[in-house]
Image (cartoon, rainbow, N blue to C red; front, top):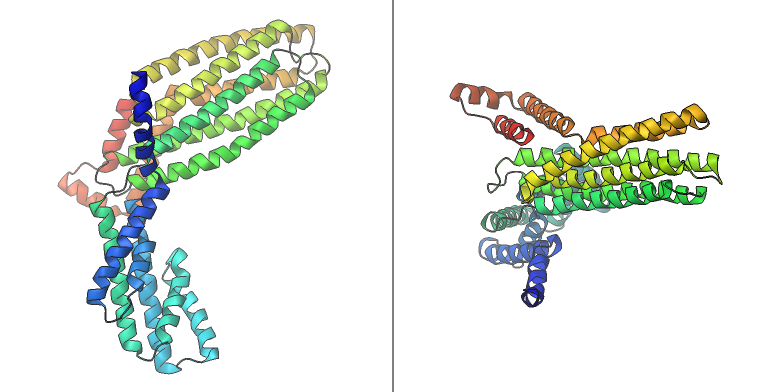
Amino acid sequence: MQEVRQRAAPLVRLVRRHRDPVVLQALRSAAAASIAYVVALRLSPEALPLTAPLTALLVVQVTLYATLTNGVRRVTAVVAGVVVAIVFSLLVGLTWWSLGLLIVASLGVGHLVRVDEYVPEVAISAMLVLGVTTVGDTAWARVVETLIGAVVGLGCNLLLPPPVWVEEAGESIEGLARRLRQLMLRIGEEAAGRTPAEQAAARLHEARRLDHDIVEVDAALRQAEESLRLNPRVREGLLHRVVLRTGLDTLEICTVVLRVLARSLTDLAKEREPHPLFPPATGEVVERVLSEIADAVVSFAVLVTTHVSLNADAAEARLTAELRQAATTRDKLAQLLLEQLQHDARQWQLHGAVLTEVDRILDELDTEHRSRRLLEELDRNSQEQRERRPWLYRLRARLRIPGRLRRSRAAARRRAD
């Protein structure tokens, strides 16, 4: 079996590499641009209709939703630029001062029609059209080539559906949870012994650097959310988006609380130096409770990615057991801190802060808290869409068609149960 795995390893790496967003983007863009150029050669009056492949190159994105939105904005930007150029050709023609005025007017029109990142394309289209003598023919050719590129780019993603990046987002969330776990374990190990203030401060800086990891995971999650939109291969796409988003929010809160805990231990190390942070028995319990919480964080991450995991039931059972054990250890820690307070009341506020921060993490990881948050987010999405498209909800009510949010809410209740 080991020999088979070793022989299959290069093939597995090749398949994974072909699913890489950069590789997929390059292949899809090259194919779309080539096809658009061939089609434009037959339909456009221009000898070298490079606008069509350029448009296809800009329109084709990794996700179907991005392709649709970018295609509409791209076509709008080009048409707006052509209209501005035609108006300027009829009024003033091309001079040094009219060129500057043309650019200012085009950029202003681009913001008015809300083409976002394609605002410069309005000015580029206007200059290209105004810079030729036969404005009418060139304007018509540019519009035709833009439409060809947009249609070909959209067709490439419809015929070759882009992948759903939920698995990659789930892996990113689990990776963040495992890094959080490793930091918790190191903090717990150091809390059980004598910790210099410099070492405690180093752990505080590590906790602060986790913010950069959260930004990277958030980018992967946004890509997964886009891949779920308007994707016919995905059922309950809204539920998947909400589950992943709320899961990342919980891990972000846990990261913030861990940073506060690291700050409390750093202050405690400064106050108690050169003595240990806690008595030996209390330090062992602190290490144990942080170790149990660290394991629960990973189980929580696996649980919120259950749509890409084959061990959903096992992850939920493991999370529940770990939280129960951590709560028991937390109660023992509270008793030890209380006994210590009766003999030595110094630094009582820092000891209390450590216990409070442990409570906050346990509360965030609680399965009932997660279920309530999930249902609240689905209700919020339902309210937002109802306010944005009230006519759609009235039509569904008349036809008695179950809405997507209603199905997602029912599925969320099944997951919570």
